[in-house]
Every structure is written in C-alpha cells, then in structure tokens.
Amino acid sequence: MTSTYTVIRGGLVLAHAQAQAEPLDILIKDDEIQAMGPPGLTAPAEAAVVRAEDQLLHPGLINAHTHGHGTYAKAMGDRWSLELLLTAGPWINGDRHLEDKYLSTQLNAAEMLLKGCTASYDLYSEIPVPSAEGMAAVAQAYQDAGMRATVAPMMADLSFYQSVPGLIQAMPEELQDFVRRLAPQPFEATLAGLAGFLDQRHDPDRIRVALAPTIPMLCSDEFLQACGRISLERGIGLHSHVGESYVQALTGMKRYGTTIVQHLDKLGLLSPRFTLAHAIWLDERDMDILAERDAMIAHNPASNMRLGNGIADLHAMLERGITVGLGTDGSNSGDNQNMYEAMRLASFSSKVRGPDTARWVTTRQALAAATEGSARCLGLGTQLGRLEAGRKADIVFLDLAHINWIPHNDTVNQLVHLEDGLALRHVMVGGRFAVRDRQLTQVDMAQLRRQVEQAQERIERNTRDKRRVTEQLARAVGAFCLCLGHDRYHVQRWAHPDQSLT
Figure (cartoon, rainbow, N blue to C red):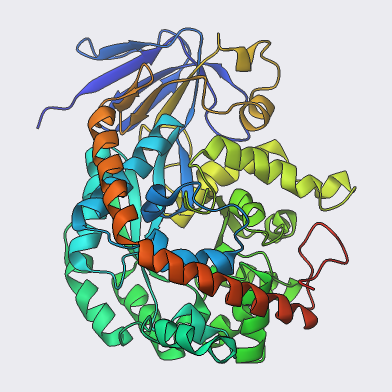
C-alpha cells in the first residue's frame, strides 16, 4: 500500500499541556505524525500541503466519560439529582430502536468533533439490557463520524431501587409493583449476550471495547468479579460510576461496611485498567489506594455540579499521581459535549474549594487531563494526547483572528479559560479532516437532524405513560433520599461546609 503524506505549514503549534506554542510545520505519514520542525520542514514532493497561517494547532481533546444515549434527552430536566435522573431513566431512555442507538451516538460524536474532541470513552446504556447488535451500532456510529471511541456497555444485575436499602418498602404499593418489574436479568445472561460484541474485530486505533458495570451498588459482587475476570483475560478496560453522589456514598457504607473504593479493592478490581467516573465522595485512604493500584479517574465537573453531587478534590488526586482524565458526562446530565467547557470548569470548581491558591488546579493541569490523562483512560496513552512524532495526527485548528484570541496572551490560559469552541476551524483525526471550515466532512447534519427529531416525536408519544409513573416515583425517591441526610458521611464535598441533605 502506498503511503500518503500531508504537511501542515504556517501554524502555531501547542504540542502538549506543558509546552509553549511555537511556529512549527508538521509532517504526517498516513495517520501518524512523522516529524515536526521549524518552518520549511522537508517533506516529500507528493505531500498534500495544508496552510495553517494565523491558526493555533493543539492536540485533539479527549472525553474520558460520556454517554451516547444521552443526546436524545439533552436539557430534559432541571432540578434533577443523580437519583432523580436514574428514576427518569425508563422514560427518557425508553422506546429506543436499533436505529436510535446509532443516531444518538452519531449526534454525540458530531457535537464532540465540532467542539474539538477527537476521541471518547462512551458508556452506552441500552434498555432493558445491552446487546451485541446495539453496541455494534454504537461503534459504527463513531467510525462513520470519523471519531475514535472506547465503547463500554453499561450493565447491572440490580435495579437502582433494589440498590438503596429500604427504598422500595418506603413507596406506595402501586409504585412498588412498577419498580419490581424493572429488575435486570441475571448477569450471566447479560455477559453471554455481549460475547459477540467483545469478539468482533475492530480497528484498535479507532474503536476499542470495555465493560461498564454501571454503579457498584447496582451490581452483585459476583457480577463485579466476573467483569474483572473478563477485563483481565481480554486486556480491556473497566469503567464504573464510583462515589458520584452523597446517597451513593452512604448506601455503599451501609451495604459494605466500608467505602465503595475499599470494597472494590477487596474484590481485587482496582488496577491500571479500571476507571472511576466522578469519584467525588472519596476519602484520603480511598485516593491512596487508587494511587497504589494505578487506577484512573474520569473527572466530570459540569455534571457533578449540575446534579448537585458536589465538587471532587481534583488537586488531591493529582498530587498523589493518580491519572485523571476529563469528561463531559452525558448530555442528559451535563447538557453538552464541550470539552473546552469541561477544562474551564475543572479549573474554576477547584477554586471554590478554598482560598489556598496552591491547591487550585492550574490551566496546564486541566489541559493535561483533557488530553494525556483522558488518553490513558481510553487505553491510548502512547498514541494520543500530544502532538509529536510517532503519535496519531489528531489535531485541532483554532482561528487566531477570532475574538477569543484577541489579544493572544498566554496560550494555555486562553485555551482553558476562554476558548469555547467558537474559534474552531478544522479538526483532523488520523491525518484526515473530520471537520473542515467548521463543517463535518462525514456526517450530513441536515439529515441527522431530521432523523433525530422524527425519532424524538415517536419516543415522546410512546413514553407518556412511563413519564407519568416516573414523575410519581420521583416524588417518593426525592423524599426518601432527603431522609438519608440524617446520616452523616465522614467526607464533605459540597461547597457549603455545613451542607447535608436535611
């Protein structure tokens, strides 16, 4: 096969979070960066030339935690806690056809690409259970959009209602019958149904697979250990929502007699393949364990605040040397897929934890999390996250004539605190334009819009009964979770020092 060459000339290049932006040319061979050097870099005569004058080039941003199914439900809720979002699940995620799984994922990919993100870790939820066919549609949607992804089916063998002690018993009788019917199938059947997806041959540079036992309390210990065995045998990642909410932390302590992290450690699950999403309600011992086990964290500052879950101590994680990636969460809980905003909020949220500026997260740390840290979460730490020879040519081009960059002062500060995606001009994934002149090259947005809006009209009609029931459930769940506030947890992660659920 004949190699193809591209040379990018005239751009200002920010190679990684700790670098200084400098004028550099970039030579790409096939999908990798072959060389970088001062303007005038030697290139083969047949190389295609891309002019990048008055543009800043930075590594593609990487989303360490998203949910492709969430795009259909963006902005559906307002004052939703995590538990109320889970309660709304049968309604907002209901009546999904196979085509919807493809379309919702492609919509997710389209938004990320248009906002400078070139790869993601997608924990996709299929109702009632994940299937090989559904997950294959998710993977195909990312490939067709021209984006990289690690695809992890979300799984459970207990319902949310079963996972919170006393919750079902506290409900009115008619609601108890409804929630009992939501109990998942045995985990053995779920894992057997996914074997075909895990066995499929994917381009590992573009699509990787992983498993997502969704929340530890929604999984029996036997299920978690089975996932751990598959992860070890296949060399694939595990990703789970751990310590995301106050209720989750309290429930874990009641059920396990210890923190969730310490229970997972007893089960032997924590390893360099394990990513903890959110990880807000961790104590110092939890973080020490994660550092010892080389486990990773996907920090999601937008949804952490949007759902009222609290503010994770990102500085404490980083000072222990824990790999931290950055994510947006799903559009049903974080509302958008803007990794520029995620960086900004990672920086800003650290500043409301206290007045000690030495414990504030720097812009360079935020950018490193959104690139190199997230790349490691996806299992692509040596291939993505930096612009340098030997890495994939995933490159974002920003217009320096845009108002966001006038005047251009400190590049990293400006990228994290000011850029919002509006200056974006092009996006390359593997040396090919996935976005050119602010337009997607592989997705027909007009057609995608028509298909999604038609699907949403159908879903709205067909889920009205579920919506009525889940709105009744929400009142019962909200009241029960507030009562849990009488119990105190030994860690406090809200902005107000005396805050509880009471």
